[in-house]
Image (cartoon, rainbow, N blue to C red; front, side, top):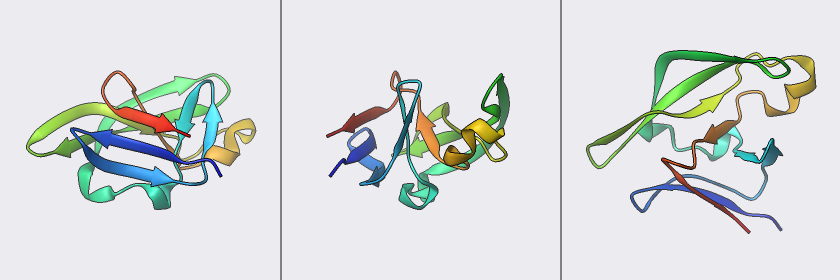
Length: 98
């Protein structure tokens, strides 16, 4: 069974046995994300086929990782399977899968 984990400074912020991979990024279901570490930001970007992305800053042990995770609250139809799923910038967050 596949398993994925997202860690920040050794702290697990997301973990799941069921995820989606889109364009090489692991998207974690909303229920697998520990929202205690996440704060919504004002940043938004647009993907031509997925739609408008919203961002989170992750705060762990007093360190903030600004805009280091994103999700699509209202994706276009081709990306509907990742609605509200969270992906991470792997340059900032340690994401592993088995």
